[in-house]
Length: 279
Image (cartoon, rainbow, N blue to C red; front, top):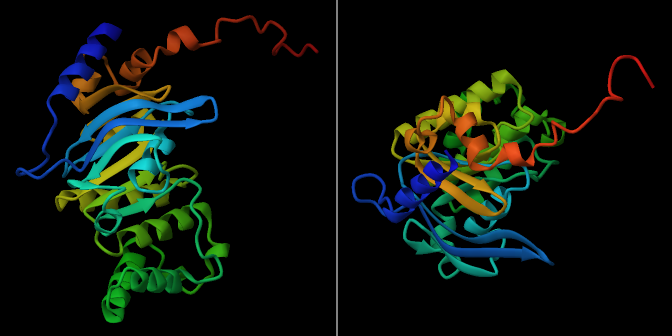
């Protein structure tokens, strides 16, 4: 089965998708490397993600997902390699790239002494939007994301779910072509998760692109139509969800086979001291 997955990766990698209606790929990565000291976090990956899709970048913890997204969005400089977003080089043309993307990073840091409404007003003006347009969009986003009742509350007092939603509102405010989300549902309650999900589905239905990282396969399978699987800093498979899943009963099973989870698992090791009320 692992061999079949490798063939899937080769097929998907060979035919670089152009996206919707002849658009360039949302993201094109070639030979991307990143090391931290002696540890190689990203091993020369090649990856092409089509425009107009809901895309999941999946992998176990420590796979290199956050490092990859940080390099793709211009937050972390790679050691080598090329990254293009919508045909624009991230490091040679950063202004053109950053005007086209929205980012909700892991470990989101916000201006916490501002209220939710003030934060959006500041971010919109920072993006160069007219004040009246910022206020209109901010009001709509606050309503849709169920934050209208908390818009004058300081961000420092927001819950985890509220912080994710106000961060998403800030990322969407300038109407980007591509939205990058790093574990957007982590620590979020089911009600907030459903609200975020509805906004993202509406966004992609308009022809925009969402790329989000996750290690929750059930979530990815329910949301995404395109998937890239990453493990140990390498891309193990990429392509339409059905193609990457193949004959496996679920994406979860295909993922476990791709990353070789059976060989890495320590579940078979003896833990005869655990449980049974003994000490």
